[in-house]
Amino acid sequence: MTIRNHRSPVRRATGPDRLTVEACLERAQYACEVNGCELRGVRSEGWSINHRRSRGGGGTLDPRCNYPSNLMVVCGSGTTGCHGKIERDLRAEAYVVGWLIKKCVCLDPWTCRHAPARRPMWLLRERWVLLDDEARYVPTTPPLEVA
Image (cartoon, rainbow, N blue to C red; front, side, top):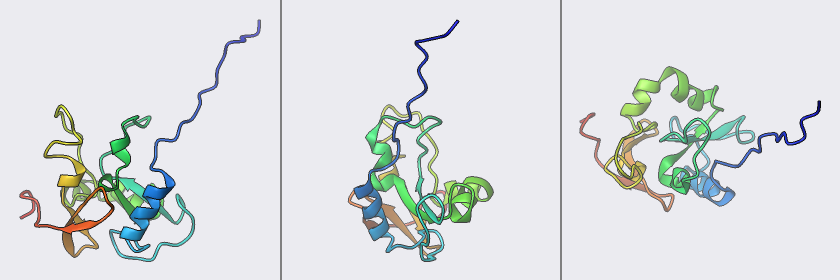
C-alpha cells in the first residue's frame, strides 16, 4: 500500500535577512565581535551570526529574534571558532558577558528588562556596549552581576 498524502517537512528560513546580516557586519567592521579577528571565508564556515537569545529548537516566527540587538558576528561556525566556544566551552561565561541571554518568563521577553537591546555585551574583550536595533554600538556600563 502506498501512502499518497505523505508530506516531507518544508524548511523555512528562521535567520536574519541579508540586509540585517550586512548591517551587523558593517557594525562589526567585518571582524569577530568576540576577539576582533578579520572574518574570512563564507558564512556558516568561516564566520557566522550568533543569536544572543536563542531562536529555540525549531526556530521562531517572532521577527524580533532576528533584530540586530540580538545578533552578533563571530568567527567560526556553531562548532568552530568563537561561535563554537560560545556554544560549547565558554557557555557560562557567555551568559555573564552578554554573548548569550537566558530566556525569561516575562510576558514579552523582547521588551522587558531582559530584552537583548537592554543587555550589555562585552565587545572585543575590552568594553561594554548595548547593541541597538539600528545595528549600532551604544557605550554603557557593566551589568550589575559583573560590576
